[in-house]
Length: 89
Image (cartoon, rainbow, N blue to C red):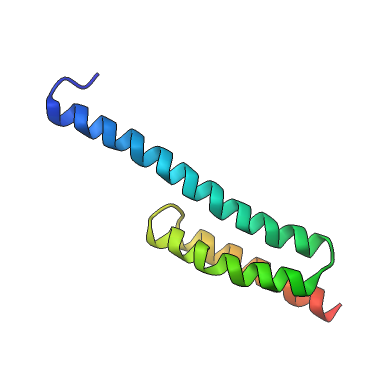
């Protein structure tokens, strides 16, 4: 348990930041799920539009440290490839 005032403040800040980061992570995942839902529904135009909406959100989560850079790069690459395959099919 935190005893010093500095440690107590740090504990409060950590809890606040944890909740905020959880909210941001959830929002980003929701945008990703919207893209995936459109891909699975076979709607390439809607999937592309959702992907264009999700991309800046995903990038900002990397800048904020919510997600790792390579994880988001991998997810964007895979989503893009799935949309491209859906358009050509």
